[in-house]
Figure (cartoon, rainbow, N blue to C red):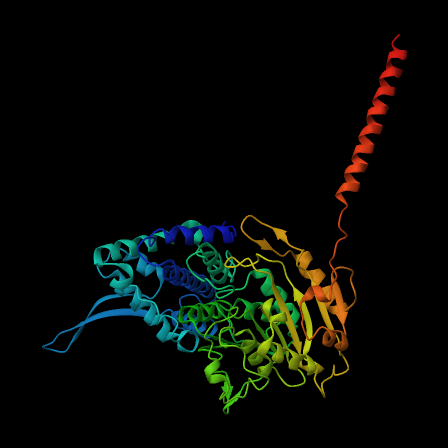
Length: 520
């Protein structure tokens, strides 16, 4: 009987497969080959598992089985390789096989294995257009530029196929989590952190931070949920999980082509086939629009790239959607540009926004200070939550989560709520070898504090508008949460130690005298 496969086994297999490409392909690029092959192996196992299940129900009714697979899951079509006779025009079938991992493994020694992999991926994409269109457009397994000349390329691809043909990598749904692709992606990014993703948070959000952001957004059944910088889609999926049922819709945007493709694969694997994920630059050319207007969402969540340089400030003044009416952020720091976009795409008088930001967002002046002031004056800011440093593998800086609630604006159900909750959770973390993490207990404490909106000594403070204005709309957390620990008087402590040592010496002398009397 097969047992559950641990995420660690899959991570180790993916990392071992990377050895095939090291020194030949840039790490930021060869992870895509690894993840696409992992995806192909996974969907091949899923399809086979469901095929066997339906076969038990419908016997030899092949047509009925395939129809049900197509309707409920996806299609893995038959590949027919043909050769056309130039004289007669008649096509001869040279080879015929299912478009799956196992067919490629059987042909792993073929002289054109790179071309065969491309053909299989093209057939899968073409047969599942509504779910996977464009997903494999950025990957070429037959590329001499990326994978070397034919002999070396074939050797590497043969090895790659063999790397995934291991008993512990049987990825049937009963044996492995749907999160395998996303979790392995995160694992690989962490291992590649020194070579890819130089900017903090550019590629993904650590799992516990993702969970916290999703919880703070508080999505509910029927919500439209959006991440305008969705990366591999982990935050969107986590926000969906918070709903508790499947009654929600997911929307995302991502500017990096290979990361967008991974997000689409991630949605596919989680059966969120209807998720709309656009490949575009959110700040300069948003594609989540209807009737020439920005779409509006109940929940908007994101971990956008921190302090993005050259984000498009030169085009912001003429933005057709008027997202930057509060002010244009500096061209070298796009943090408030993303926040402005998120607030403008949240439903008026209802929508919620939760966004991960670097601490500079809380206190920098000039244009950023003016935008921050206006949002506070509009009563949109609901909470500022400071997190520990070294949570991200690509940066050790501490981050914060800002929560905006448009139900607090004029006419909203929470219009009367005029305060802002500040939480300093920067000292609450689990210290690991390379980075810090948050525990379930830490998340629970933050959420309990956020819900209660009560004062907690050295941890949380509820600031009214006047207090924030007195601080010139500076949101730096130590201005509101006093975490000062009384300094220890070293001299006094040393004096006390000296006194205790003197007393101890006197006691020992007396004990020695008593012992002498006893043994006389």
